[in-house]
Image 1 (cartoon, rainbow, N blue to C red):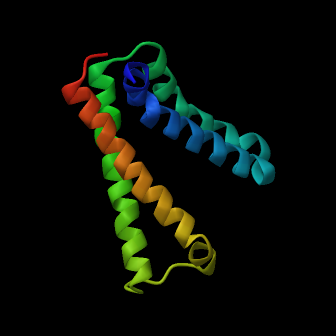
Image 2 (image 1 turned 45 degrees about the horizontal axis):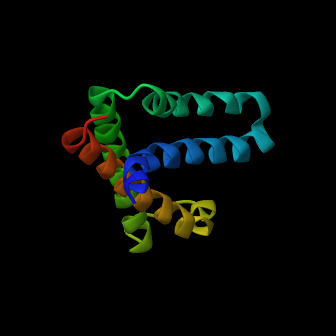
Image 3 (image 1 turned 135 degrees about the vertical axis):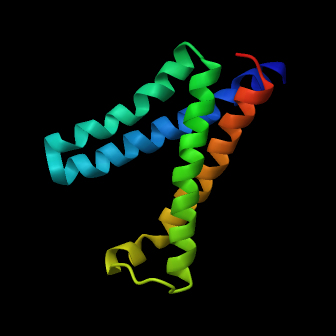
Length: 119
């Protein structure tokens, strides 16, 4: 049980690395070479896995809380038909909402890790 508790603090970083890799594969199918900057998003999370830093962890957490809260507001406004967005967005609304809520939870988890735990 103690080993599981030691490794649970790495779940948010692995989540964001997986999301960046998934977005890369989707965009790489259509765009090709221009998809490679998406992989740059995973570098800070890989760095946190190798050499954890409390300040980088807090900065990443705050940044992604802001981004995911914006995405949650867009998801809610689109589901309530407050604003009109393209049809393509309506098709992926469920997956986008799930991604936004999970990103928000993982970002809060990262902030909690930077405030409570030592690396």
